[in-house]
Image (cartoon, rainbow, N blue to C red; front, top):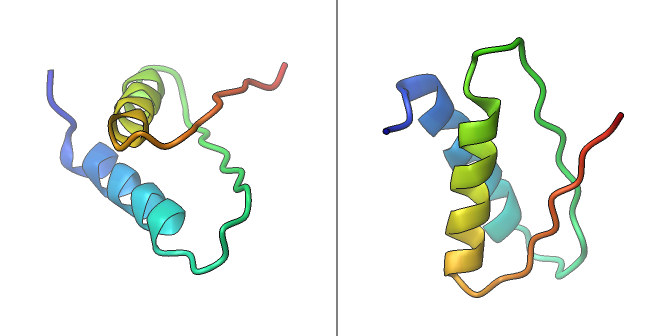
Length: 63
C-alpha cells in the first residue's frame, strides 16, 4: 500500500516540523480527519519513519 498525494503531503509536513525545529524539545501533533481518509496509515508511516531513524515517538489517542 502507498500513500496518496494528500497523505504524502501530510507526512512530509509533519516530518519537516519534527526534524527542522532547532529546539530539542518535546513536540505534540494532532491529526484529524473523516473516516476512511487513511489516518491510521499516515500514523503508521510516521511512526515507522521516526522509529527507523532511531528517534523516540509515543503515539497517544484522545477519547
